[in-house]
Amino acid sequence: MRDDPVLERRSVRRYTPQNVEEKDLRKLLEAGMAAPSAGNERPWHFVVLRDRGLMNGIMEVHPYARMLEQCPVAVLVCCDPSLEKYPGFWVQDCSAAVENMLIMAVQLGLGAVWLGIHPIEERVEGLRRLLELPEDIVPFALVPFGHPGEEKRAQDRYDPSRVHMDGW
Ligand SMILES: Cc1cc2nc3c(=O)[nH]c(=O)nc-3n(C[C@H](O)[C@H](O)[C@H](O)COP(=O)(O)O)c2cc1C
Image (cartoon, rainbow, N blue to C red):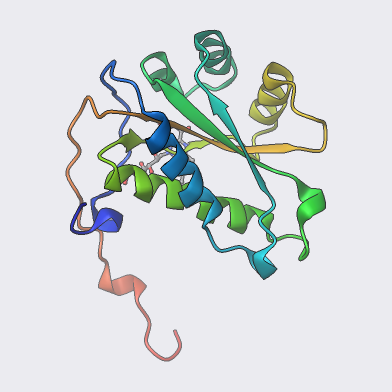
């Protein structure tokens, strides 16, 4: 267990060849699904990727995803808009799921990074085609996970000029 996984979290883009165990993958998915969502609507689906051919395909449609070359497993967080109870909130729901997984990765001693897909249409279409997602499913963000192959230190980003008390 880390002292403060939220403050220690950094984007880790290099991984060792060691696999991510199924029990850790399960915890990552549990963390994603434990996220808050509007009216508890939980509009998400999670696509687990271990296939090298698919990772290579994703690198062709996503220009900032070279770390997929090394990563043993990645999870694509998708939205099914038909599950929304409160239209318009799904991006916030799915973002909470992604962040929960990133924090759980720190707890498990794993490295991870948020790769943005939505709202960049070429990436959305590319992922849909490659993974044969239904037309109404929106690929939102991809998160590669692996044992860290680089050390990233926590950064103190506290900025008092961005804090406003009792109004602006
Ligand atoms: C919406 C979003 C999209 C991102 N997309 C990418 C990406 O495509 N490739 C990448 O390497 N990092 C991506 N990142 C990670 C950011 O670059 C990273 O969070 C930021 O530089 C701060 O660094 P830190 O995560 O180490 O604190 C993304 C982060 C967010 C929140």
